[in-house]
Image 1 (cartoon, rainbow, N blue to C red):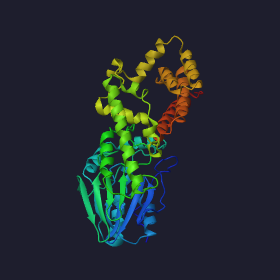
Image 2 (cartoon, one colour):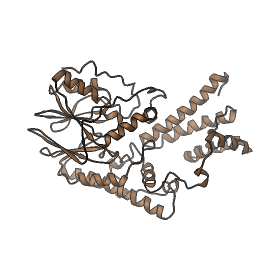
Image 3 (cartoon, one colour):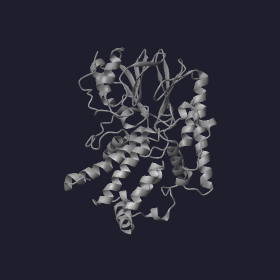
Image 4 (spheres, rainbow, N blue to C red):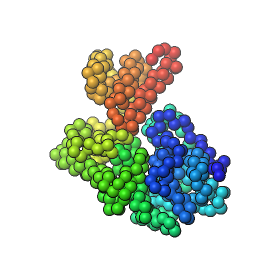
Length: 428
């Protein structure tokens, strides 16, 4: 049985997209299957039908992959959380189920999913731009895209149990990366699906383009999940953690790492340090962080520290009086350009810093000129140098998000110079 024509795949080419994934259906754990998309799309067969955790954002290929193995209706669709890409195609899955089996599946999510969907609907242009920057799509790829969200028909506050003749699945609130995340406990199988709270690298606290994420709340969730006698833990990405001892080590060490970050930042704040100082002061003890699942992979350790800081303080992170009521960046850049007696010396010094390996310092220096919107030779050269520095900086971090935003910044600087060339007919 194939997926219906209505479930079309109109997703743009995903070259370089960390969440592009695959539609190959594999067995994640005994009797539990998944497709690695924006997180695992988890399929749990039961005597009452399939229980599906997440549907992704392109229904046709995902449903077709399941239909190659299972000819059962979907009894329930569960949202792991409300991030748009995880269930943007849920409506197509429901239509498929009705047309092929005459059955409307339960659609289950935490009650906070509704609030998140509303926020995304109010800011669709912003959300599309965030996706472009974070997942390396050309600017404008998602211009005009609207979100056809399907709201859950059943919402939970703390827990909900899906009872079937052969499997009992407890869906539990697991606030972590988001406040609407869930986990799932397969009682008889002793399999725990951790959802967004359990990832194979450093917890994604401090995402530069996302609202505040509470590291302590995430740690508390991991401690609650550790109370389940799980013999296997399905992470949001990557292979499952096998064995009760390994599951406990993963959950306990990740919680401890987040608590260490929290206590360290708060301690330094109590001493009077601002966020820019703190992220350059902290050294991460190997006895806590030298574990594969605590390595930087998506976020970075500095981002975690910064989110903890803003959980205790306001937006005035550098505590510089100048930044309390900032002037427009272009106006500031114009005045700095006038004040500089030797603008070329700024470029030379930035280049020298980069050559000795101080790329971040070089970026600060070149910003004295590169933030301007002028078309003069020095400003154009500063933008060119800053683009080069952004790409060099991207080579020094394992954080996918940091890399993406640095490359995106370089792209925009190069586009600005190219637009000048097209307008003036001269080389930028």
